[in-house]
Amino acid sequence: MKRIALPVAVAAAVAACTPNNINIGAESYAPLYYPQLVAYVTQGGQLATVVRGNPFGPGPVDADSIAAALPLPNAAAPFRYRAMTPDAARKSARLVLIFGPAAAGPGDSDTCNNAQDEPIIPGGGPVAVKAVFCVGPNWTSTLFASGPPARDPHDPQFQALMNQVIAG
Image 1 (spheres, rainbow, N blue to C red):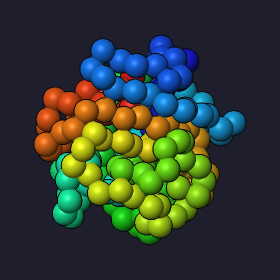
Image 2 (image 1 turned 90 degrees about the vertical axis):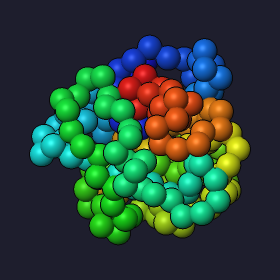
Image 3 (image 1 turned 180 degrees about the vertical axis):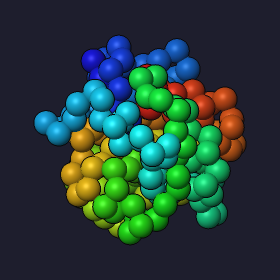
């Protein structure tokens, strides 16, 4: 099966529980998705990344630090995640990460187009993330996942969660 956020072919079952107490919830793929899409859109060496919500506790989110700590997907050439505002990234292929989404479940085109309006719950407890890979106004893949609390982007718990979300 495919894993989400950055659509990559990996083995995973929907609602599977990984050994690190990471729960992968609903995942979905649009007809626009194809396995080489990430490699194609990252040819320039970067991927626009929108980060909303702070998975580590109350306070402002450091989107640049989170983007810099994200793992690369298994099937893509090396690239850099570039934190951008929703408006700046709107026309780009992009990864949208909503930490602490008020509603559990996958994202959709509304998440791609209105990430700044997505309701969130302040972080500090278990980390929940809605990850959506968008091309222009359309979503291509989406996933909801949760894992144990984490202190910062380099915390092993956060890294394990994002590895499951992105790399599988």
